[in-house]
Structure formats: structure tokens, C-alpha cells
Length: 274
Ligand code: RP5
Image (tube, rainbow, N blue to C red):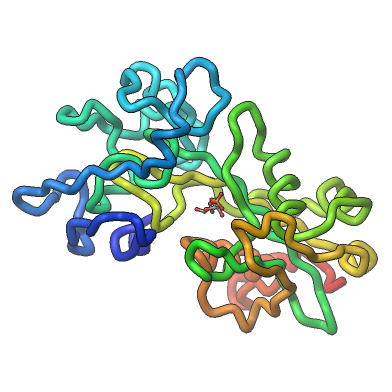
């Protein structure tokens, strides 16, 4: 994963990022690299004692020993933060293992280090065409999977279903069947190229594919409950989707390749078109 979005864009409340060349890394920083430190007031207002685990943001100076023990998927499999990230000796924080992005602090992210998210990728066949459920995010006005952050004490699987019912569909039998019977596996687990990323805080997600058979797809009632985050939801032909929020387009391509494997690889055709 190479940061592209996170180096070139940011939410409106962020100060300017230090511009970085394509190949910039922690070993190849521009001379005098000195990014602005920014943590949004909404993050500071939700900071808590680390051990209570109830709110979503860290206190300002958590000990490295605590941060280092947290779980990270930056290397694909689960490991601890101190196994995948080096220490910034000036700030006493872990450096983003995806590389520098020209801004330090936490920005809009609550945790130093990884901020864990989950993304449900829900597909169906409709009139012979592969379609996917996408929402329009209010923060960037971009199309995206209906994902969200894993709340303290929650799990990835609970978050996948919870976010889907908050942002994309009415809860009920069809959603229950989709999540119980339609899972087609983890598509991606690791760092997301998200515009909120900083040198000390990043997003890691688990993106999971669910395919709805016709009866389940027909019964799903797409509808937005969380109207503060999302302005609309719909089924989209995957072939017409050109850009998506953060790294979401890459994962959509991976899902598409499961249905339409490149002929020359001889890969098995995994799903009937239903
Ligand atoms: C992305 O941000 C993740 O892939 C996920 O879709 C989303 C989580 O953040 P919120 O939607 O909760 O803001 O990086």
C-alpha cells in the first residue's frame, strides 16, 4: 500500500500537509521535514483514560508501552503495533507504517496508531449485471462502501452488520440472511489510503464480501438511517463505478475479479451468476 490520497488531500479542517515526493519514506524524508501538528477539538473532547475503553479517543500523551501492544493489520496478519511500526523519538509515538503523509497529531482520528474499521462489500446480479451497494458520504461527497469504525468493545463482524443497517439497509430478515449465508470472504485487511491519515494515526480495515442471492437481494430494503454521515444509498453496476472513497475502488476490483477472472490465468470461476 502506498499513500496517494492521504498525501494529496485532507478534510477541510486540516492545515496544509508538507508536500512529499512519490518515493518518500521514513528513510527518505525531505530535508527539514517538520509537519504541522493537528488534532481536531472533537477528538480532544472525547479523550479518555486508556484503560476504560469506552470512548473513541486517546488522551494526549499515552505511554508508548500501551500503544505498542495494540493490534495492527499493517502487515496483513494480526501483529502488535511495535512489531510493524518504528518509534518517532521526538514525539514518542509510533510512525505510520504506510509512510509519512506530511501532517502529525491525530487529525480527526481518535487513536494514535491504528484506528480499526470494517467495510461490508455487498453484491448481487441484476438483469445479468454485477451490482454493488454504495453510499454517498457526506464528509467528502464521494461514493463508498457503507463501512465504519469498530467501536470500543465491539468486533469486526458486529460492525459490518451494524454499519450496513445504519447506512445502507433496513434491519430485518433479508439483512440477517445476507450476513448469515452470503459471506464470500475477506477481500482486504490492512491500511486504508484515507484522507484523514496522519504520521501518527492511520486507518486499518477489514473489508468483507457478501453476495446476495436473488431472493435476498429482492427483499433488501435500501435505506439510510445515519443521515448525518450518509446522504444516499443504492445499487450500482460495478462496471460504471469509476472512483470511490479512499482505497475502496481497489477492493471493488478484487471482488469483480472473483466473478470475472482474467481468462488467461485459468483461475476457477467461483460463483454462478445468480
Ligand atoms: C475508511 O473510512 C474505511 O474504509 C471505512 O469505510 C471508513 C470508516 O470511517 P467512517 O465512515 O466511520 O468515518 O477509511
